[in-house]
Length: 75
Image 1 (cartoon, helix red, strand yellow):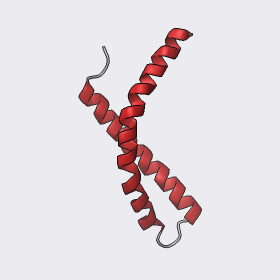
Image 2: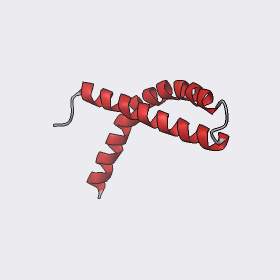
Image 3: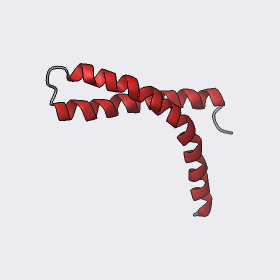
């Protein structure tokens, strides 16, 4: 028996939060070389990316588990 639905949604929320945080940090700080204003740009990008990442994770997460089970049974 797998985790309950609340645990899965909470995990997807946290994964989306961490991924959006780290990815927007990397793709903002490095190209801008930590110049003045990069922090504000990063926070704006994070605020946009996180809700999108969470909604997409609700779709992609179950599909990924389905494909993983299918591949495991295939091989």
